[in-house]
Length: 127
Ligand code: SF4
Image (cartoon, rainbow, N blue to C red; front, top):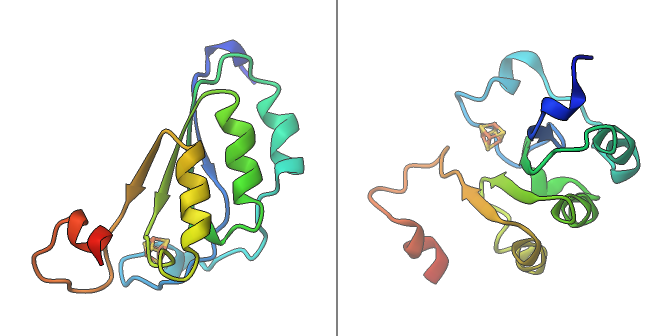
């Protein structure tokens, strides 16, 4: 597998399940695996790469992964962690978002599926 020291950035699909079902989502065509990535599975793989410094966590909706806090905690001890979330669970699981926010470098909130009209992120944050 090439020179593992050359890799600095990794994209990690934590799970394929999602709370939405967007029309353009490619999982609609390919189906979604129900398995979730666990820290126990991920850790030995990450440990093989000595120079990783950026971790991008995608889904599905990554906040649905039951081990996401532990995964993020572990990765943030190694470098910058970025997550992509649709934000639709902010209301339901606000404490999880707050906990994640304290451990990540940046959160990308992807707004889609619904027609919100013209909004900015602050509108969502303030509500
Ligand atoms: S939020 Fe993302 S993963 Fe979920 S259905 Fe929409 S495009 Fe797919």
